[in-house]
Image (cartoon, rainbow, N blue to C red; front, side, top):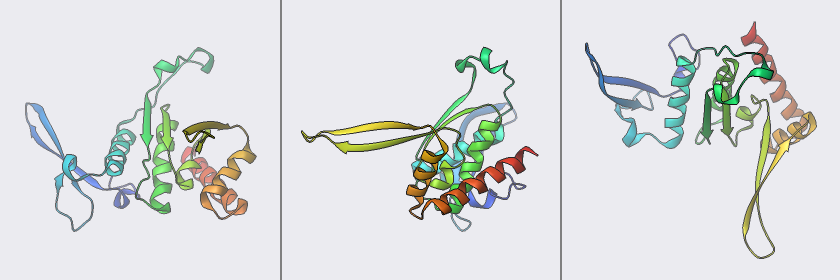
Length: 186
């Protein structure tokens, strides 16, 4: 996040140290998770979610648009891929929406993003959705299943389930994300 970025105040800050005129021999990221917090080594004090969000901030800032050939000629191995596992851990809906927007920015620059999330505010920014569920078999074993949500109605139902507020609220959240996407493309 940058100072011009309205979401900058919502994302923890980090700073680089040990830079010399001859290069960077060693990088230590220091994290201040709050305005009144002291800078401390990210490796020691950052939660998994904070580390993931800082990585997302770096990738969003450093990502350059990927120029690819026509979709029919594009090799999946040519696209940068980012995987985020529960990037939204410990955050609420407002920051979840900002995280979703940052993920969308990476996608808009030609990056492939896979995000495992429990927040509908993050999920609505995705193009394809998979639902992972766990259940117990008759013999007591836990089994995971993955279902591809292939149509708008399935997606709407899943977002509504995540929100626990019904389909109208889910549709409003989906519409708001689509409007934000259009604003960012104009």
